[in-house]
Image (cartoon, rainbow, N blue to C red; front, top):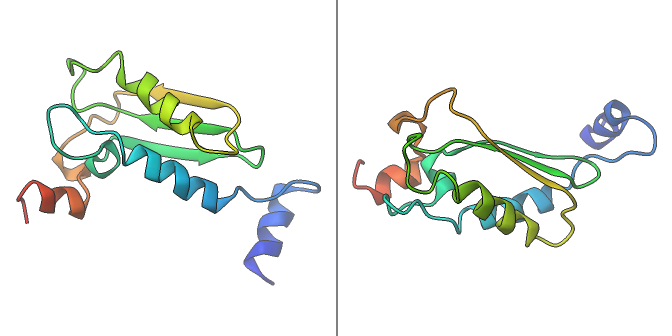
Length: 119
């Protein structure tokens, strides 16, 4: 049984699995947003906790910030929403800012650690 068949079976009749190419484009957009205090993009910083793309191409981004006192706490979610909306094919966009689990340095990607001289 192919993975595509299984995905279609689990999604139900008339629906298709989310477009992974679309997800990759969204990730590229997220990688263009930088934390103003740390010279690393928000994706590699580990600030994006979840990225869900529905079969209808609605997008939900679950994210956090390095601290609740971050100077961009009010503007960063709006910037994320605007960037995701720039991707062709995206319908609705919902950005949810969460504080649990709290962000810490363990969430940095290998690329971020390299950029920050931690490797």
